[in-house]
Image (tube, rainbow, N blue to C red; front, side, top):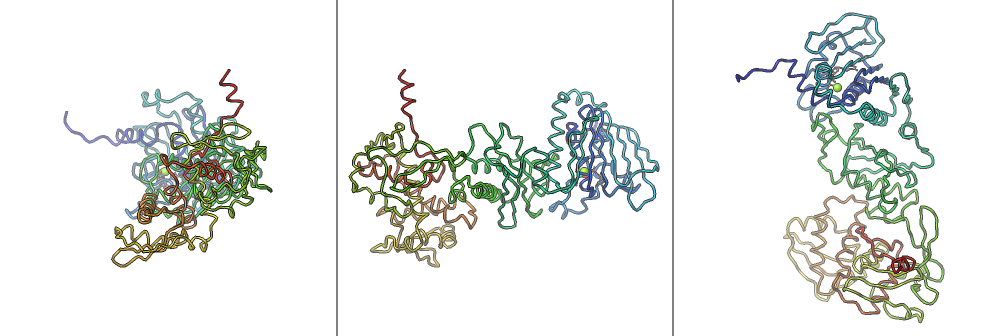
Length: 587
Ligand code: ADP
Ligand code: MG
């Protein structure tokens, strides 16, 4: 077959497949045009789930006759003039493809008037025919009517789903658009039925109206900012979590985006706060200098690329964790380090025992404390009472002798409470113990650490040397004393007291490796992050044999922690098999 250039009409029809996949995509394009035109009120009417009619009315800038004529020509756009613009897109549209694509697969009528002009203009277009324009009196702004979508492309029309699911898609997009611009009024009709009419307001009120939740009771504001990237918005308390992800919204520079990656960041902040299968509710907006994001990715523009995805991830996580923390849902120091907090918290009580409280419900759980002896240590205040794990191992108080613990498989410690059999993961538990001890330790205490008799000199790679210089204050706070020389060699003069003898150099290297792997660490959570990395490396491992006094010390120290149930890296530290459960099993 000879090569021929596609007719304009055919080319538009093919392009239309990319831009307009279903009524929902047309609605999105049309409303975005209204927003780009500066409208403060946008009305959308759909009939037959948009297949029969889509009608978008705005009070924006309107178009001149010439602009109107150009608007339905492919690659005609008033928004993008130079290549430089492409790298810093501030408007929602920029390809100049939407109207042309829609006009290739439906009958289109556009009525428009600029406020400075005495009359308006009406353009009528049918696929494959030249459009006509005539002068007519219209309101200021623009109305676009799209009729019989895909009537000339039966294959596509057949491909559409049921009216119900097409309408759902439109409705979802209308929600997103309304949430993305709280200052714009949106009125949305399904035929004659009003779906919503939301007046200009702020994000909080807009969320209340669109998601139908009591914002004063159950929404908390979230915020974090670093290096020109700002995350802000609202997150729902665990009590309003949903069965589906229907209450989850991300906006990037006021554009709705979906991101499994960022959703994961939110999920980690809620970890252990939700019943399984429940999804948190959140509306988070991310603002970045447009030069730092690539929006030219996909015609639907749902997917975007950041040049620093990891940082955005951490900021989202931080914003949500902090918000939950301030709402007193999460124990304070946990929220900054992206761990998995639990609603259960053990509150130290007078006399040294701990009370286990569910922070969400206020419910007090049966304590681990046994009638005779058991786990009550002498730790009235967790933070002060810590010696090193093996220091507190002396069986000083008589009641402690009665605690029995058994190491199995050189990795689990088994003991019991009045509630059931408790199985502790020795590594995860020790990680938690070291972490809390170090978080609560002041810099002075840390520096009183372990001076080496002979300083150790070692050579660092250039990238490790850079990291060590950058993180020097955190290393010092941890108890390291080091001298980094210009040739990237380093003298290690002291290490934290938890470092095992002979491991000084390895520990330093391991830490630098770990920091390198983590990438960016926002400055305000550096200390906790680095302590967490340290704890993960210093904790006893599986395969380490423990003496019986060490076993009891580990258990006592673990349950004296503020958050005993989870390690700083988010693993559970212990499980309980209740006696009831055991009875059941033996039936
Ligand atoms: P893009 O939005 O990518 O520029 P479109 O095909 O969606 O491409 O629109 C083409 C042009 O038509 C726009 O650049 C704009 O100048 C004009 N236009 C479209 N819709 C409106 C509207 N509602 N109000 C004012 N101008 C509009
Ligand atoms: Mg557009």
